[in-house]
Image (cartoon, rainbow, N blue to C red):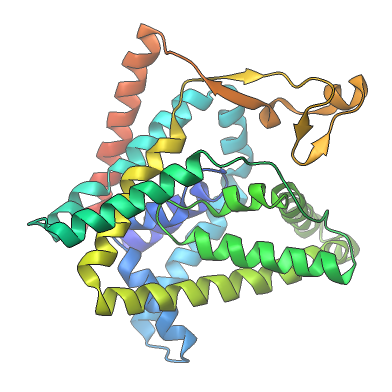
Length: 315
């Protein structure tokens, strides 16, 4: 179960960062098919001890990683984004050798599936991440938006190459949900029941949506793997390879100006511009320095070695 624990930890860390895929991390460490099959099996009310233990390890490790490393990952991304993204690229690509070996010899079906996966990731990488939607209010429409956001985030969270957090960002619900989770964590540490109840109107509909999304997609992927195994694995390989498209690590922040739209809100005054946190600035790709290229290569290599090594555990 070591791979399940490590995979869950990586999945939790990945889900802290828009653009990083939790499903990719599970695929990279070699537990993705077991996780998908396990969720699908449990959803039919079959509870084999081995399957329940595996799912418990993944979920528990992911939850602990989110709670324990949210602050650290956020600080590192704020201060060393290019270095962190180099590590993420290595961790993502580390799962390719195992999947590649499973698919050899390559044929037209696999190549076509991989091309579809890469194309999907390219489209997502160049999508416009401007938020739309509700603000976490208490109206019926706000609850509906939160449930749809939870469903979309849960469904994409377990697809390799697809970032649940990124989808929440596109839907304009990322900060609403992250703030609610942070408040709930603070309430738990302070044993403040009243504070915890204040965010249930966000967490409950999101949680329902996440469960429906995870269960639905898990059953779909299990069905596709059973009927069209090579084509489905080809798409997964493409998602894995294409995931790095949106992770170009060398970027510079673009300071917003009056009139710009940031996270779905138009900045109308200098005060509104000043209130935008640096982590929400748009970024543009730049050419790296020689030092950045050298260090970046070492970080990618280190991430690749860690991920590929973990994916071989128990082989």
